[in-house]
Length: 369
Ligand code: GLY
Image 1 (tube, protein in one colour):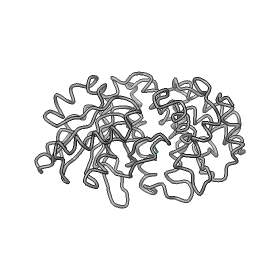
Image 2: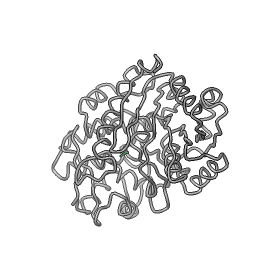
Image 3: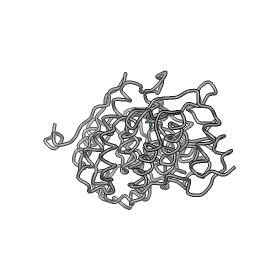
């Protein structure tokens, strides 16, 4: 193993069938370049999927690490998690004769990672893929754990597969070109990990918000998030636990996905929609008697301090949000399942939530009838 690898943070994700490393650090081009060279020397065909904005923002990866590797670009944004872009990527794999030994590389944010992962899971019934996340949100959440998929009109992430990458490279230097709004959206998922399982992290971010990728705490915080996520995925990869388990990572997401679905993909960044969702989940937790108003206020304040919305940007119809929620894949046996907080740092799943309560909670974040 090369010497620079030992200076990297390495976390292993170990599921029932697979084990793979997440590397976290700066200037990871050499480490990733070595893995690519290794795969090429074994005769593997490679293919990169990225988006047009990333290719322009980070050209050095394409002139260096990905030199000579066939590359396809998708338009930036959530609308690319579509059946048509999925089909275009499969055709790209076909025209580049990606065979069973081939490896797809997802170079981008959550959209590129989810789309590429699902294409890799489907092509020839499954080829390997590498995640190289370029946004904070994808580093701390979506690139880890093997959830891949696309959206259809009926809802977000309703079509997909669990397909674990063979490795994840989290180069924090890539975040330097991330617009502040995207950085803040990533911080939503970081705050989520504090709320659901790491009260020390929550306290630290509450005392001093993390607003910039140059903040020296970043590597430690990303590591902490990935460790927590890896532990959850190791015990409940496919989100099948009767209670708790991987479902806890969906804190605020049933609300957030409904907002994205009703507002139209593109109005809210995912992190922004789930930020409003966290406030709704906190209000629900209070109404169920778990937390008090001061804790709801702390949650709202920490999100605002990170530049995130805590109410809908403009009113959405409550009926539309409620029907979007009913289509969520977290519906079990016709009942909506929510993740609620017992306190800051501890979340639980709650299966029998009264829909009237959910309706009231929507009112509190600015819906209209
Ligand atoms: N983003 C939630 C999960 O990976 O389970």
